Image (cartoon, rainbow, N blue to C red; front, side):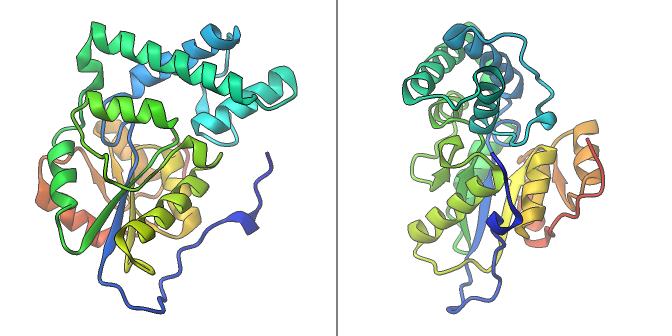
Amino acid sequence: MSYHAADHFVYDAVCRIHSRMNLAIFDIDGTLTETKAVDEICFVQAFADAHAITEINTNWMEYQYVTDSGIMFQIFHERFGRTPDDDELRNYKSCLVNLLETHRAKDSSLFAEISGAARALSRLNREREWAVALATGCWRVSAELKLKAAGIHTEDLPAAFAEDGLSRESILQTAVSRARESYGQSCFEKIVSVGDAQWDVQAAGTLGITFIGVGKGDRGLKLRQVGATHVLEGYSDYGQLIESLREAGVPTVTGVV
C-alpha cells in the first residue's frame, strides 16, 4: 500500500492543442449532498454486518488513503494480513447499500442536497466554457444511491469512484482522463476540484490543480486554514460559484484540521 511521489499526477498546463474549456470536478458527500453523517454510520456498520469487524478506527485522517477502498484494504491488512477478495467486496457493498436504503426509508432528510447543488450542477453543465465531472472516494453503488436520493442527476457525467484507486489523487486523475474523453478535449485550460475535507485540499495541492472548498462555519474556516483560497457555503448564489471557479488557486497545505 505504499504511495510514491513518482505516482503523482501533476496537471500539465501547456497543451499541445489550446482548449478554452475548463473542468470542474465535484466530490459528493459534504460537497453535493448532506450525507457525511449517515454515510459514516452505514460505512462502519457494514463492516460488522458483512465481516464481523467491529471497533474500527473512525479517525479517518489516520488512514493512509481516505477513500472507501483505501480504508477497507487497510482494515483487512491490519485484521487479516491480506486484501479483501471479490466476494468480500461484493458482500460489503451489498450490506452498505442496504443500510443506506434503510436509513433513507426512515428519514429522507439525511440525504438532502447541499443548498442549490442540483440546480447549480445542471446549469454549470450547460455552460460552454465549463465541463463537469465527479470524483469521490465512495464506492460507486453508494455514491449513485446518495445522488439519486438527493435529487441530483449526474448519470451523463464522467465520474471516478473508490473502485478506480486507493488514493484521492488517483481517483481525481481518472476523473480528468474520463472527462477528456467524454468532452473530446486533449486537455483543459483550467481544472478545479470542489470538495469539503482536508484530504480533498491535499489531493488538489499534490496534483497541482486549483480547489474550492464547501463548508459552513468552522468547517469552512478549517478549509481555508489548510490551504483553500475560496470556500462556498452552498450553491444558491450561482454567480458566486462561477466567480470562485474562475478565481480559485492551487492550495498550499499549511495546517491540520
